[in-house]
Length: 199
Image 1: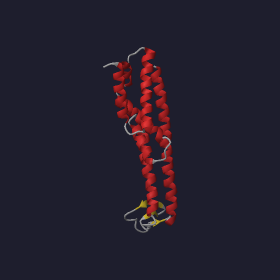
Image 2: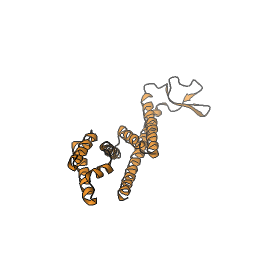
Image 3: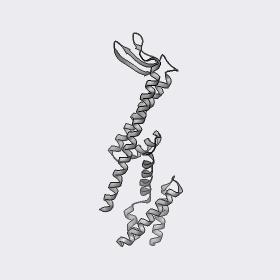
Image 4: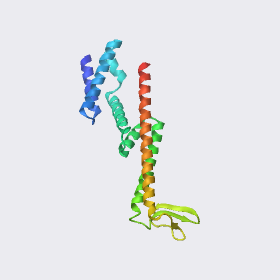
């Protein structure tokens, strides 16, 4: 294969592997890689096939770009689904990503559970609340069978605003932790990329 054919084939494979992103973004990435191949070949006197070999398979390069775009979008998002998708992707890159993913899952489950419990209190007032017996808390949340007397529910309908506030704060803190972690991860990836290009 001649050099232009190798480059064209690689760029076509990259374009196809980039998949479901906007046409403008996909074409911008393809132009960037084409310029990188041309500039590297000119600057170092390499042929296009050796530059392409250093870039790696088009599918792997496309996956790196997709990951980067997802992490960048999620670092500005407030959507729990987008944030969890990005943290799951980050989890494939190292132990810190795994920790962020599990913190996110745990935080969203707790926060969502508190909000759901608050919404269930008006529907099931006898089964939802915080129960105390002998001066200590014995149960909280929505129970199929609430604790029998002498246990008593202490918050009444104050349970609703209290759990809504606690649940919302938990969701907000969880989202903030994930967003900060994604931004830090993005910075570290940029630094590592610069070091690898320098070396």
